Length: 379
Image (cartoon, rainbow, N blue to C red; front, side):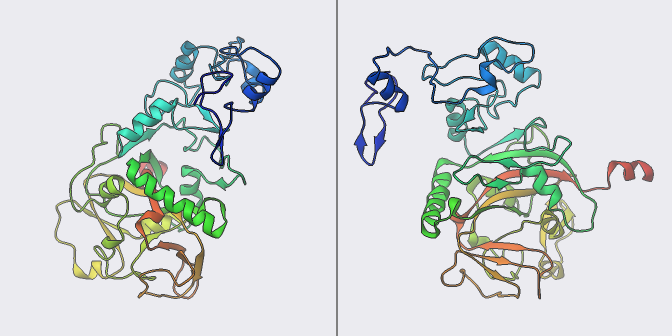
């Protein structure tokens, strides 16, 4: 049923009751006897950039959309020009138009259509340009997500660099990819997230971003051409991006987990790197003693390394400082386990015990060779 005033948008439905109008603006306009004007700005909505086109040098007013929302640009031509000139972040899907503002935060896409097309093509990975806020722009930063409580989270580069706590040199990030799972996997994850949020009465179900390291038997993500997921059974990175995590795979690479059979992540990026033992592709079989040393073993066709940044629903988490290797689920009354530095740990671990409690968000490709200045000195 369409709004009786603008006759363009669906009516607002509240607790099963269908109102006559799509929102407060149309309801007020109807009471005041105003005529619906296609392309008239909605006074209840914020005015971006003072209503002036964001493109430098342009002083024309922004375009007004049919639903009363204001664009950030005066015309389609200036939207395209802003991206081409590097003055606006490009839509991750079409790469031609600027990302849209949705509910006060920057979307990954320029429009609903591009977002829908990306999900329809999922699983898919889309390159994040260095102009994107996921990259460091010379200073550290955090990005604020528009939620009821304004949860502050580190973005990808900041979290990678500031959580590199080991004494090893900080690697250089080569490429960052935003990951999109299938609609089925996304719906499964979001359903569990909402369930936990309601149960513990905490926004987002105590969602956290955590690093996960695993095997990569291909060069996925090394460059803009390396976007096809391989079918190698040894390549867990491709498998996780395609079908998400599978707790049943615990123990496939190591016979030990400090907190039992679960899915392991860490807030410390350098800890994930320290658990990776890389070997040259097609080299000799992996020695048994290596598998027993609690190391993840990755074959290497690439000169770069990879790790995943994931969203993890921690829910009600129990904190442990000593090993509990026989756990198959969190202790009664809890949703996850946090291993804190103490008797048996030097760096943190986060463990969940169900597949729908975690999803991959970003693939980070990095080079952990000597820094460029050291490489020059060695030559």
